Image 1 (cartoon, rainbow, N blue to C red):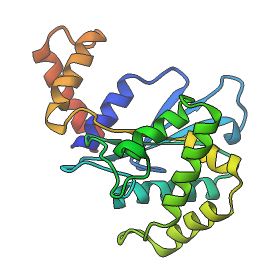
Image 2: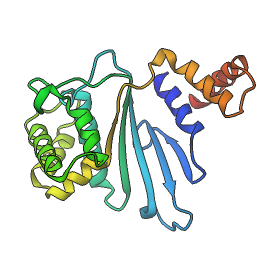
Image 3: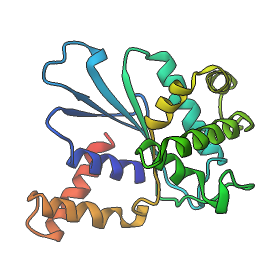
Image 4: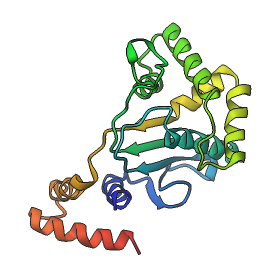
Length: 216
């Protein structure tokens, strides 16, 4: 149900030039296209993977490594497309053990600072090198296909620095999102705020019907 509610949330805030696709590349895809675009290469596709978790997440978590390897595989299979990846979870980020960065700083917020341009060049180069070295040494997650992991590891070991930096900048961690049990209240509030419902009671009924539509 968490994935369905997040799909509804994404649909409610779509821009005019965006299309929502479910279970296509990932759980939720948002395809945006410039008005003048004439072919697929001119589209931007956001691949959104959704996970509801009871535990905190770190870059060492199998689910995190699976998402990174999946994005690497998507990029390899679609070199002509402008792909971005968003990993969305209700879980909060926690520090890796042992820590990659000083002060027991979790790697996931460091990653997001990197992709957002929130570091000076020397600091960014050091962070990129540490992230890359860390990922290269990780074991394959048990649930991941061997071929997918091998392709990811080959990318880590062979990509130029600029290629790896592009990979990092196009992968975002959306952690600490609304808890699954609070999504109904959040979506009802969005429906009222957008003028789709005059009251929370009506919004609740619309949300119920939207859930039905998104599961058929």
